[in-house]
Image 1 (tube, rainbow, N blue to C red):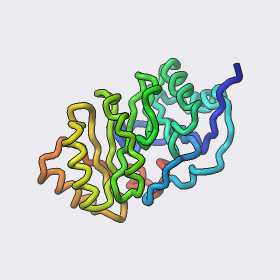
Image 2: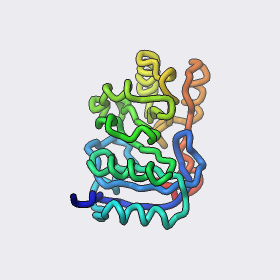
Image 3: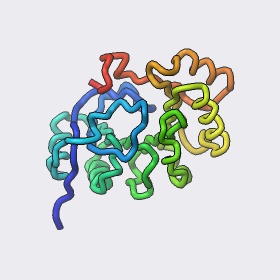
Image 4: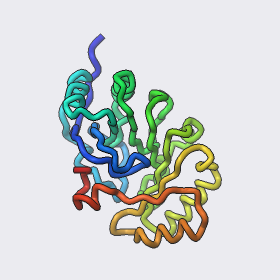
Length: 215
């Protein structure tokens, strides 16, 4: 059987800028391609291009950084079937693995050892109709759900989803503001005011380096 191959946008070593793993030195494997077009997307450069690499070459590149924490991201990594193979091999090789996914594609085949960081797209993203609600029952305590919010309307929508789906009883819930669209202070104040069982977060890499990439 032919070795799985993946289209890779970039592989680099930096500090995790999001999720409960924020601040951890991490190897990022960014897969090329995404079926969504969120209006506030900050990784449009990963929609196209990239380099075809064998799974063994990807693993060899990751090993060069001598870091046992790996984040597989995109684009939308699950848009490539070989992503499932990559995640399994990473886990079997002793890495602590997280997956950043839009939540628009089925997460059911993802290795159970992977921490799945799943977005739910709010209305202002322009892609909320792509949310795959069937994914929610598949989440467990070491997974996370992230809401990226651009307005008060997005916030109200997210609060309703958190309560309706009892998300905080299932896994950690993260609320983030879209940079330049929603004041971080305002979002933090809303969360405190409404006694929400969620974690407020900012993108650490943009604070550190003022760029879209975590380096």
